[in-house]
Length: 384
Image (cartoon, rainbow, N blue to C red; front, side):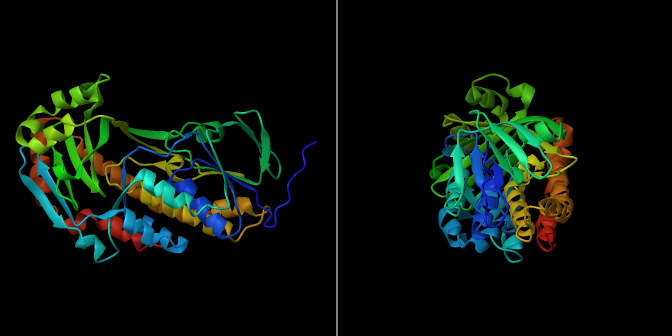
């Protein structure tokens, strides 16, 4: 017979996924003295890509007492520059447009941010290399069977397992998706190839390239229609597809030539119709998964997790379903609006016909910087 463990706070919580949302939530729960169980499919936190953290997300670390550590491990972007495929600058603006209102846009490697968040989860039971096989919601708890055959019961299960969340599929069914038909490859190069503190993007007809500095290195991102980048050799595919850009921008050609280990992103997003099913709830990309076009996904995941933790701070085991309902009402509208903005930007970036790309470039040069960041700035001023 299973003995149900007693907890002082009356809430036993399972967090599925040790990414931005999962670890932020775990850290805030540990702060409340409610140490959760966290499981993560991956056994390693190394590798990955760079994340841009807007103040709407990084502000969460003030509450954890780790914001200064984030600043030390990240790099503040001072300028953004957009050029066309021939290298002509279309837009260049000082990021003080953002920082004067809210604070810096910080670039940090995902692995460094994971380590920083995990350092705030000292009381949590972190289990790597573990997945969920089944979930069964009973009257007042959730029975969880893990892939090693063990079974545990929880008062609350939070799915933070990403855009391809298996928990979402298991409990909520298929989510609506937006597919751009493009693929993006990201990889790291040395810091000497591009100017530090300046984020640069080049948009062409059917191709994009970006260079985003982080401490001691630069993350490169290059992409185009998935059909044009078919094949297992990412470097060869990109050299072939971005040949016009490479001919005009030597640094781009050098960066693609240095490509070794690359991470592939299908440029799509996900929006779940429901976030809550009794004692199971979605958070982060599992609820609303972002394309990286606006760079706001990680910030929203952290902010949503902090919002969920705040609602749970006023709940016991019996009132968990109410806390989850309030969390969804609190967060959903703003996050979905940010996702809609990211989709709109994707439609502008991912243009194939040369004539349309030319028209886009003409308009890009006239677009005020403050307007480009307006939605991000506005969302920071809304209660969450």
